[in-house]
Image 1 (cartoon, helix red, strand yellow):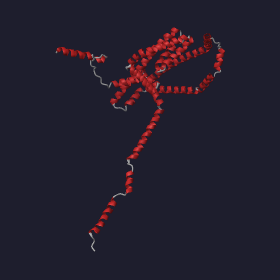
Image 2: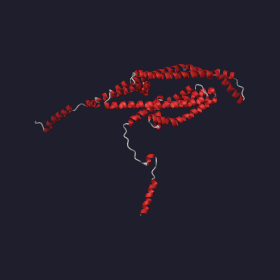
Image 3: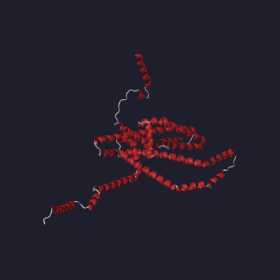
Length: 405
């Protein structure tokens, strides 16, 4: 019996179905291929983790080295300040290292002499105050007995003070804080030594440092770096000049007052007020005025009041009259910009930022000023702060048009 057409087509359909099944991948292999991650994804994840680790390590290192970086910044500005004196000596044939050493030696002798005189003055005044304390206490007790009709005695007051719990706690806290004070003193000396060494190397090896910095830059960039360096030297020197001039004026003014009142050690106190009030930001004025007031109190209590009044009046005169003019002329920046830069520097770096903020901003302003194109200002009344009479002008035009008709 011959096969029909339908029975003949069945093997052909089965063969085609088998061919399609062999060409199509299994269902399980397709799911694995779809779930397999791209080849670049593991490398990207490793690179991201490495960048995060490097950032964390750099942040940790930066926080650990913040103190050292601040010391280097102070040393750099100190080297810029003494650069004119060192360069002047070097231009006269002296070796730069010797010139730097002589400048630092002069500064060290001046500071050591001032500290010695101040220490001897303080020691003498402390001894004088301790010896005269019973007399001061008797005068205070007599005033209290006369005013309030009491019967206090110096012996009873001394016994109550000696056996008081407050004095015992104060002595215990002072004894436990001796180690902290010693650690702070040693840390301050180490920081001072670090700043001195870095500033000495920056000043002595200034040409070598500039040469090494310019060797990695193209000629056009080298000229810009050298110009910025020169501007920084000029602005830093000008700032210190203005501070020194204000310290001199302040010292002379306070010396006149202290000498007129007959306060002992008037020259040393005047130098103290001038230097501390100008070179210690924010709290320098209060520290400078506290010591003369204390010495004046040992002479007469009313003298301390006079010193306080004079310090307050002179500080206002300096803040609003003297300092804006001298600072603006020496570093060539607006007084408002100088004040804002001090606030910003204090917020960023504390007292150090307040001290170096003005020369840094003046250097940046002078350097950027060379790249700012300026135009001639047109002659307009509004430039000088005068308003144009808009209303009257329009009214006059209307009246003129009305009568012309």
